[in-house]
Amino acid sequence: MEVGTERAESKIINMKSTTQIPVVPNQWNWAEVASENLGEGIERQMIIGEKLMVCRLTMSPHVVTPAHDHSHEQITLVERGRVRFIIGDDDLIAKEGDILFFPSGCWHGATMLDEEVVLIDIFTPIREDFLGQANSGNGSSS
Image 1 (cartoon, helix red, strand yellow):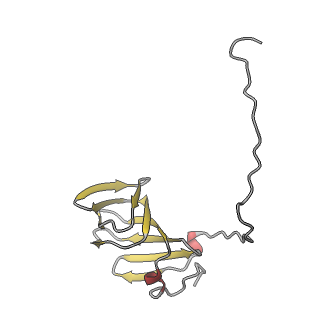
Image 2 (cartoon, helix red, strand yellow):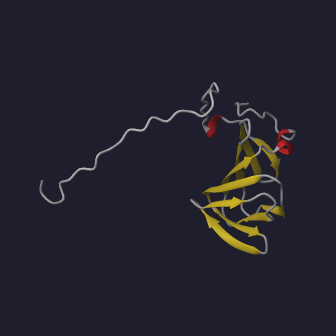
Image 3 (cartoon, one colour):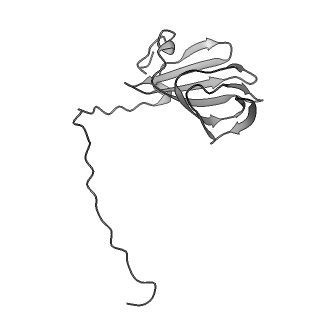
């Protein structure tokens, strides 16, 4: 064989679930998920699993979510716009494509800057306090 023409052998690994749970896959499109108005300039959509929930928030420019903490782990993805986050004693600007992780008990809040912002928040365990606020907690269309 000539130099540079060697091929690495590939291995196929069969992976199996560690538990035998019947899995029912689901698929949604945000355009079809019910939306609820949480106040001036804030719309929320939710998809709720057994131990995890995803919330899509669309917020008008200059909306402020007051700093707070909670026992849930949270990952926030900035889908569109720019946001000033307060995290503990620090603050930072996050933009489209940025991802933030807030561990349980982390003090955080956000201020939308000069454009509409869309955030995807993922929580585990699910935010039971959100369920009472929801018009429809199952991700179905209204």
